[in-house]
Image (tube, rainbow, N blue to C red; front, side):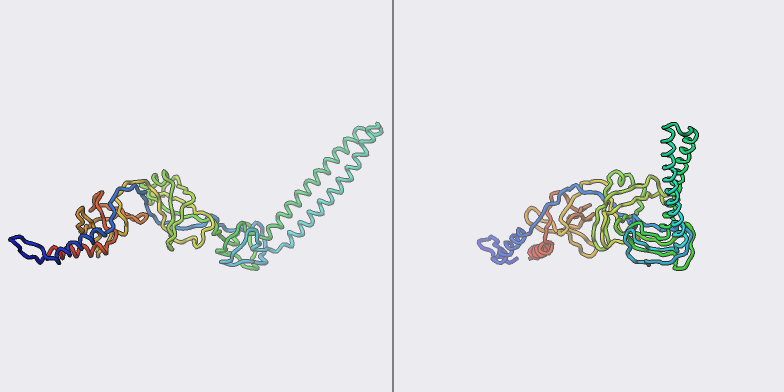
Length: 351
């Protein structure tokens, strides 16, 4: 530092005085914020797999030959749309016979009802034996029962006819087809598999050490590969553990209608497990130099120095400090400017 001696007293040079004032002004221009304890939410991050809530395989309910397959893999199907048709000649014939049987039974019932009415009128005038009225009453009951049976047969025949056209139980996408045109299938044989993208959930395995906290707090979010964070609509914690891994299965249901999420893909599930007071600083104040992480601390007199520390989780643009910083210490919010001030202070100290 340049200086002159006057009357036995050391006086700093004009340049040094200006330099010191400049450093003081630069330090004063640094924007700072004090490290403070903030109550933060504790979270645990686990891997999960997306799956469809609605995924099923449609099976045949009759024995028949496949006449038409209307959809293939990756096709979008609306609810109620016909997806497979069987040959229905025999079923239509049975439905026709059942319909004719209903008409026949209805006509017979009308004839018996008229005969019963005449017999009842004669009985009122004492012109017919009581046994004849009883006989006609029994005939009427028999005719009514036959009509009821014929109608039941018609319902059954129509039900069998409806099974010749397999319809989609819900709107979705075809993921597999198990039959081809011309094949003869039996009852219970798989025909087509589909799933719906409208309702999705995430299947995740939670360690035994965390399951009680997950069950108690009941809050989670799903992080997608594109950066989106989706809140969980609900959680279902299975009441038993997997024997080999001793982990609990948890289903995280997502809100309906989410786009760009597909069954089978991996995601991150973040469960809230409690709260803790943590020493926090703005994340923009934290600098990383190779393997060293630290902040620029501004002292009470404006002196700037680098402080190495151990950071924790970053949350809402703030970083938790696990070691290396005390509550109330001021950190520079502009590390670039703080680094320049520190270099100038060091240079001034060596003049």
